[in-house]
Length: 200
View 1: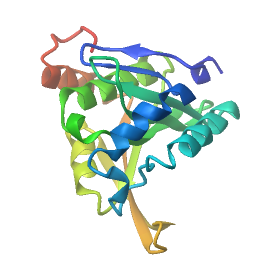
View 2: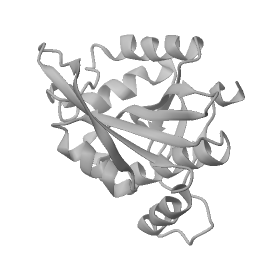
View 3: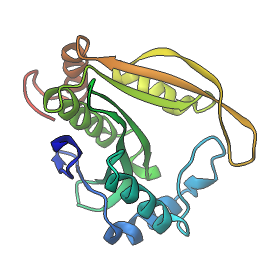
């Protein structure tokens, strides 16, 4: 159960820290920039709904089904959220999901580094056999980002969920396995300009 304890992961471009209600104001600003919550195929909290979303994630953490993080930029400003979720510690495996970034830091080194930090902890500290990513079929940007990490498509769960408007969502399921992790780690370090064998 130690894997479920709040932790901080720090890199060169930013950090992941335990999600807290104290981050609400800054995260609301991050969501407001670019009106991220209006993208129909994503589930990004609106500024008005940010407190409720933080409380929801913290409640899931309290029952052991989620480990939520706030993403900080290099200045220490909250610019997004991500989680370990669908935790199966008897395997062990987990999903990295419910992730969003403020528009100015999308497609930057911060995103890549956060994935390296999360994957390193999952494979090297929790000893996961696999780490999963899920995204909506129509979220092409997210799918490309996941594929750039080196994750492979396991399949598509058709009519898996409903969008807020009631229409049906197909979910693309990707994963990285422990066997694949050394090569993926080297790939991510190369993308970040980090010599192989060093951290993020």
